[in-house]
Length: 281
Length: 263
Image 1 (cartoon, rainbow over the protein chains, first blue to last red):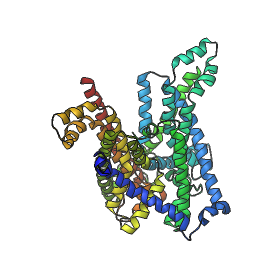
Image 2 (cartoon, rainbow over the protein chains, first blue to last red):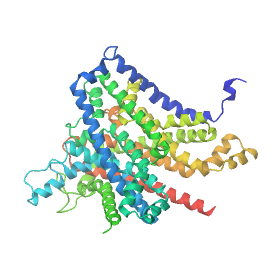
Image 3 (cartoon, rainbow over the protein chains, first blue to last red):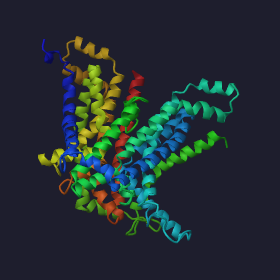
Image 4 (tube, chains in turn brown, red):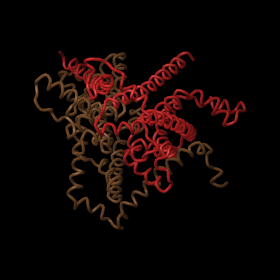
């Protein structure tokens, strides 16, 4: 019997999407990898520039710093929400979950625009404070790194909540009772029993937030006002303005490799479909 | 106040913080001033009138709707077929392929935009409906794969066998037995796919120029230039459609749960 005949006909159902993904992603991504070694001339010059050019180092450092701070803040605040959700009655939990879901659904563009309206130089907050006589000069909330962080943390908190909540709901309540019965205070029980038990959730949430932050484009571009240059915005400038495909391709390869590497680590802490399914589903 | 209670207060404040800022567009869109402000001394609908009478905004609204619906339909069809295929296979290779098909969800949008751009320039698909619809479909299909996959996990395989044993063809079984029982997953997937396309901006920024100009694309320009309250009105419309879709999803879910309860 030939191989073709032994192929399960169910593959026919998978074929259209598989073909679409292969044509739209696999081919062009290989092309980008190729470009990173060949444009403008063959060699590894694009990658060497990472060590030689201080502008690129500054770019990577800004991206890393913003992503790390975003991750820490989102996980800390997300932990608070998840803890409350894990310890309330079912009806309250569903109400809280509705807020999380709604927040997932709000367009990133509308969010960013809203922050500009609220916090901009002539925004509602600054105008209000000036009219109230509390300040004489507008406070620069946006068009700087603070603005980028506000926008990103606001977007990322829900992504941190879901894996942490999943870990909390998996905890056997009897362990906590045992800790209390053995004489530990509530604070001790939290810090020495509860928190360590939620560690896989914390790590998964942190990785997820970090991965998503790495590629962020809209929020840094608008909230940073051109002053906080992160990799995604830099790539877009290279492609649409300066037409330096080699540099853009090199940065894209770097970003994609980091994302896939971290996803692999994440897959060791939780089922990927669970982590991804947490998003807009 | 005990620490747990204090935390509950903090958590609720955070949840309100997650949702409330985006709602500021509603009062701002109703202002009667010419700049972004709250409507303290009078409500006016002038900016909605402006948006609905401007050929540019109307055209963007129309384009976003067409692209959103078409991409959602395409993503739902290929996504559902693939989900059923992978469910039937339930093999190790199937799981590898499932992982591969979910990748578009985690690839940073900027890299997807780059990939499509590379592909489209030689094909002449930049700034075309076809190009944007294909791009949005491939980005949204994994969402369908997830929701339909979840529905299939609860589907009793013996029903499929029964249908085949009673003489139905594979296609008949798919159409008349499998599809009706995974309908909630298909509807969820379609709604998510529509919204994913409806408010997509990064890929659109790269693939559209003059001809194709979706609602988010036009808003992006408005935000970067000197913002007038018409953009706030457009934002409210954008959000409104998203929430209408969200409501449809909620109703479909509730119905499905009730139907499950009665059988």
